[in-house]
Image (tube, rainbow, N blue to C red; front, top):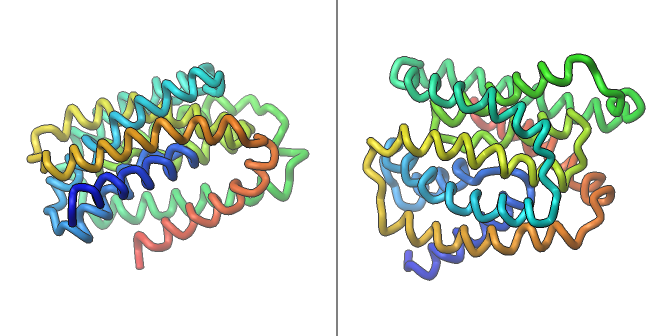
Length: 247
């Protein structure tokens, strides 16, 4: 696969994930293991290395568009960063099968909860005294995903933000902000693995271009309509990801 193709792939993933609140590490990981047959440790390190700069660029773009909600974002980030560190330290000792099942169940439950919120809007919009606890919980789950498996952890972060009643545009922007912190910490801990620099830099170049485009696209959409159409699709995707992990 040529470097031009890598840049195009990076661009497409960068636009997609930064328009839907992910970090992209899982998608890069899939590309690196499926098409380039990199070993898991190398693929994990390369995927985080690839995703991190585009997250920074995307978060800056969202900040300039005033879409980041720092109050809830900081609450999640404070919980996620220590969890990332703990997960990174514990990762060599956690059986892969157990971790996979835990994450799969969490994903399915998150997707179901989003559907419940969609069909019970009057109840979901009420602020709960447990909102702070929910934000902390989702932050911890995301941090553990980054630390243990080298994923970006965007799934639980975005689902949590939606369940805390942010519209899709603000949830996507705030997710990018949080993932900068968790992915940065995860990258530090996974640098001891061998990064495939040639592939990583090519994908990164495309991802950064995609990150420059995504905030501009979101700035032109109606937040209410975007949430209406994308939120149920995201719930289905989260459930599918959870089921796919164990079959």
